[in-house]
Image 1 (cartoon, rainbow, N blue to C red):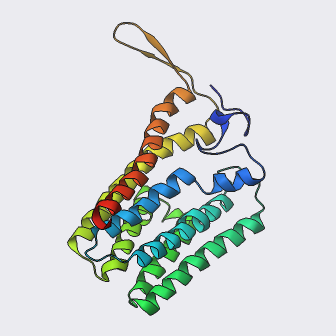
Image 2 (image 1 turned 180 degrees about the vertical axis):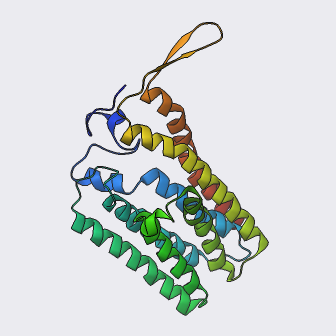
Image 3 (image 1 turned 90 degrees about the horizontal axis):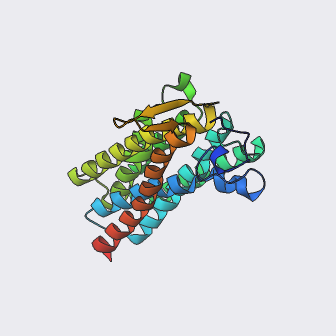
Length: 250
């Protein structure tokens, strides 16, 4: 079934969490709420892997990644081809991207002053990858599944653990590797969904079962199991993060 124009129904929108375009709804869509919470959960996972715990450092790390991922990265991504089809002016998107990145780096500077100068390395890597990935710089060399998994999965967990312990320990690496694998799985699910929602004009086909039953194949049918898995995992990750923090430090 061919996708209709944007805004005609939930099946025709660029993401399952996207609202119809216009006004405040565009800013909700820009935040990618399920995915932003999913990736902020990795900050909690990294914190739970640390030996020490400082609640202020946890909140600061969550806020920094919220500004970097939730605002700056998504604003830059929307500037690069309008994949979410929002009507937010480009100047506003640039302002959001700059403010989000500046806020995240400002929090990092406080961490450098109050904790360890080694956080400068994390700040430099994070800022570079954020811009290079979302604007597809250098011919899109950094815009790949592997870089997504490293930057949006392993990096938040490893940074959060380092912010607590001011060191890199084996449990940190194991948790970061798990977050990398989870983000890679997310990417493998979300990429075909985005193709079906944003780039597919029509899909026609029939699946014939062994008993002769014929199942119609169209865009919604192909999309449904993938999006169901993404929805479920996007709920599971914040719940797991909250449970781990409660068990570890509550």
